[in-house]
Image 1 (cartoon, rainbow, N blue to C red):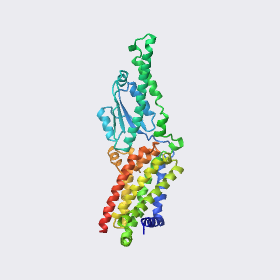
Image 2 (image 1 turned 90 degrees about the vertical axis):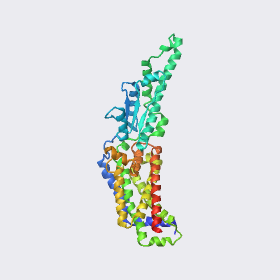
Image 3 (image 1 turned 60 degrees about the vertical axis):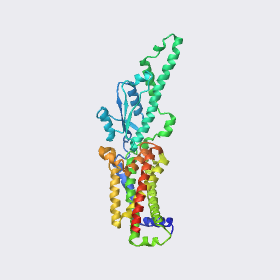
Length: 410
């Protein structure tokens, strides 16, 4: 018997079990529709952009220009803080109330007029996927903001160079008010993203696609929940082999212990990957959820999520002493990871402490990565960190499964 023979045998057993098929396909579709309509369905779409705060002198034209740029973004939105104090703003980022805070020093535009290059400090939690996404978008906006400053300076330079021929003194060629007007016009022009940024950063969703609202959240959430539930049958096969002495007979074949585990792992990976792929196709075609807007990003998240789920199922199967125990472990992990991933209640509606814990869990990593694609219109770069963390978790779970299996077989 080869590894692929063992994989095929496991998949055949899973397909013969009608209860497994119910958890794999029917239940996630039913719950996606039910929760999707509860969270908005095809109703008015909610604003899923990440909240950021622009702090500083609101009378400064630089503050107004940066606010306009943020409001034109499809990734971040302007949030109103409870307090404008520096420490309170930093605490709001730490507690997850806002994703980022950008500080504009008093007299920013005056300093630009005098020829200096003042900084734009930004406070953001780069340990979270939403923080990384906000940082990248703010970097994009600040590039356009700096472009407006440079355009105003070029205007001042050209005005100064023309001054001698007009008989004016060079020092009085461009007043601060004229510089401010040039900056304001340049910043207004920069509100429209350049073609290169539009192509590489985001895409424009149609009105029908935006109206998929609730389904854009419940689809990845229910895929997370029921991909774990679907592992009950696969983990039960591993337990059954040990109880029926099939494992002992497998040990007499040419298959090594690592080969046996690899065969079971490939079966679980194939099951989860096929399940997620079919649910993604259903959501994309029937519910207009934009998984196919960035197909490579969706594929990468699906592969990494399948790798994590398969490793989790393998550990459940190896660690369980009975089929009932495998069922209990699967259900407990399903409820815990689904809840922390925001499957039942979106994380933005929960408390700051809960969000901080939840966003560090694999369930939230999967949901956040999918939502970067289907809700925020981002590409493959927005899911790389989540995918790397999922693969790290998968590796750790697989190592634990191997160590546990060796102890059992010793």
